[in-house]
Image (cartoon, rainbow, N blue to C red):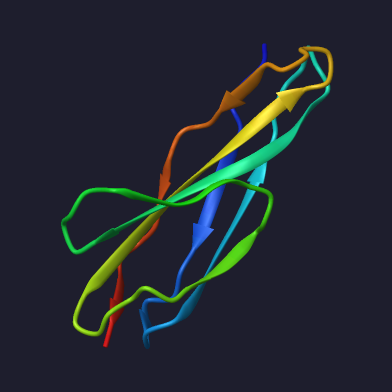
Amino acid sequence: MDRAPTARIQVPAQAAPGFTVSWEGTAHGELFDWRLDGFDVQVRQDDGDWQSWQTRTSARSARFTQAQSGHRYTFRVRAWQKGGDTGNRSLPGVWEVSEAVQVG
């Protein structure tokens, strides 16, 4: 049985404005030759709504430069995987949420 891809995200516990967020993922599947097909990364400031930051990116990290002092930022990532025998079919994974980053 094929399973959705998994992802992990890493952020610093505290940071100055402008810090690096990193993520990685694993494709899963038994029936097809699954491979990673990008990542979606979202961010929210304090308790606000989730906003897309990186969409279907192949990158494994990026510098977050929109941070403002005195605010808390939380990130989440999900991986996408694509099977070699499935044509254009792409399967998203579940969101993995980071710990909050306090920008000071």
